[in-house]
Length: 182
Image 1 (tube, rainbow, N blue to C red):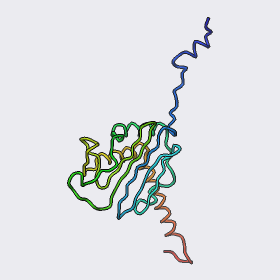
Image 2: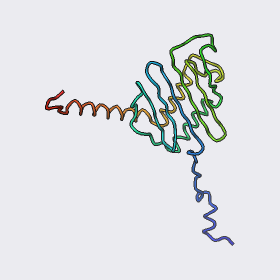
Image 3: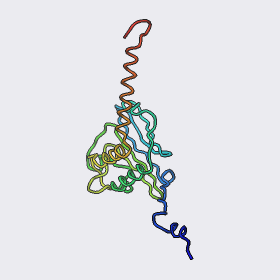
Image 4: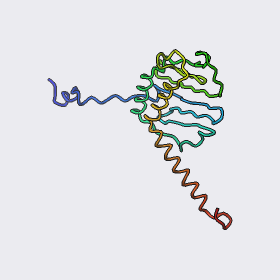
């Protein structure tokens, strides 16, 4: 016969929710390079969103952004919705009979279990109609970037970095240098 404690163990309320093993299952990097203004990239590692940028993109944030498993799961849902797994790695304006040569390019790499994508382009993007087709309209890539910023609350970290930089400028302006103020 079953004891009451055994009955509780088989109860659905006694079952713990399985944890996602995101650190092993996913890696991604999103970046852009602009010839005149610099480049940046975001990547996930050890449940941290890491940023690297130069030129106009230098010092966009301070430190790393902690990423929860829930946030990573939401980003996975977004990249699934955008169908990035079928994006190409060679979007080019010549595909649609145009020539744009301003040195701008973008890339996105992701690995999730057995799914992998390495996509990118130079002044061209996946089309809304079919991701395998080229478009000069960057809206689908903009949605990918917007999902990243929204899910990981990046705008808040950018805002914090701007406030910090402004305070540092104020300190430098108000500190006496050689007995005088600037």
